[in-house]
Amino acid sequence: MSEAVSALQGVEKDGFVHVSEGGLQGMVTLKADLDAATGKAVKSVTKLALPAARGVTSGVNTVAWMAPDEVLILCEHGAADKLVSDLSGKLGDSHHLAVNVSDARAIFTLKGAAVKDVLGKLSPADLGSLPVGEMRRTRVAQVAAAIWLSDAETAHVICFRSVAQYMFDLLATAASSGSE
Image (spheres, rainbow, N blue to C red):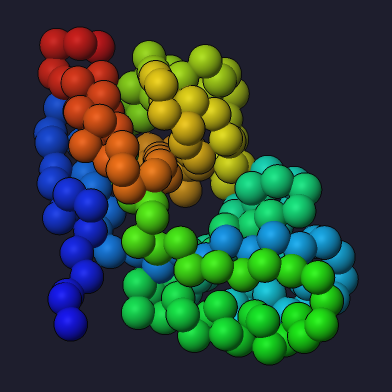
């Protein structure tokens, strides 16, 4: 059996902001009514509460609001299938869809005081007002992406794996020294 590898195998680029591909990252999409029963199931499996609209809750795992009926759960890459199984078991017959999307997505981390400036060059969203811990779904150039800040100098960008090289090149160019 083949060994899992991330989209760009941890590529990094230094500039006035450091850009790196996040390597193997477990990602589970859960589509369901985000009600008390779903919240109880998510908390049981992840040890985290469902976030408020556009929110992100973090601990060992991360639960990010993606839409009124969807959350994205980030976990260890090897734990994603079990997380899907556990969620489906806890949700039982309630209408839901839990899917391991780990190998269909790529995640990038930007570090530096000017992360919002880098992202602002590439996205039509008002990222200058993006608070820490809020998820923003937008476009980065021609690519659909999800962006959130885990602190004032660290941003995370998720996109489809098929466009990972394009996304990295965009982010690295926007963060290049001299392009401030």
